[in-house]
Image (cartoon, rainbow over all chains, first blue to last red; front, side, top):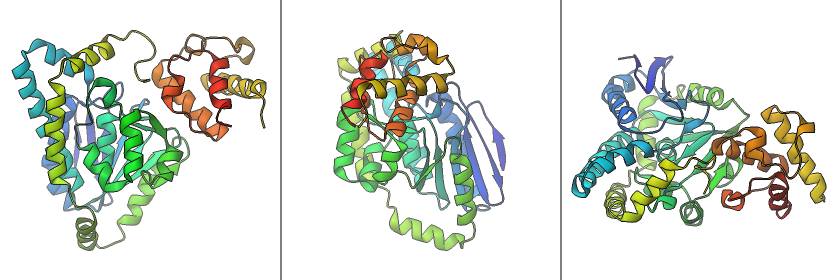
Length: 267
Length: 80
């Protein structure tokens, strides 16, 4: 399927470049709808990989790349279930999203995330599976999970460990603060910073560059330099599931969901 | 080095420009959420613009509980 338009995303292939557009209002929250659409994309990926060299992920939503997991959906669903069922549901969701992200991570295509606005939590983890992050000057990156008594659960920690120094990871995780594009570039998280509104254009220019190289050679090089941290990814799932069972988490989710103030995204 | 008054004025001017409100209508003691009509995502946008403008990093926990321009200016001033 060279083109597809779903409820929360769409994709197309043009000139050897796959473009995956995230488009779920208000901020591409990753819940069941997005997961199902991403799974559809993964199913189509082998065919797309046979006719492309690069994949660009970007967002059509003004708020940003993605604000992360759909916490409202998570809270609402968890509230309806007794604890054991909720725990099982969380684990199943994590296994599914990990399967999607791992497949994207190991795609032979050179993957580029064009990030603007908020790139938080699960959204940050989606960007991290990409080979390159091109950050709009107004992008912000954040792992706010500690505010909810959790850790990132979509593979963020193992991927950060693969890409960045431990001190930067500790700063992001333990303070829960967001960093801007300038900082992201300085620490090696972003490979380029774009003027406001220009990240997608730069991503397309980068992708066009990538298409000049032999696809099989690029795929072999990527496999060599970008191992999938399989063991750590599994450990992260286990730790997340253990933390999720604590009462503080539901209380944190409740506060976020019921926050009527202007400030839910601030620490 | 900028004085706190200069920093405050630059914040007010930047906020007025980017959120399209009259500069004359903004005072240092104003609640920027209410005056600019913004939510927390837009507050992060303001934070980013201020960081870029002043060339500083301002961790968002530093603006926890901050809602007026003057206090925001003191947080930025502390990093100049």
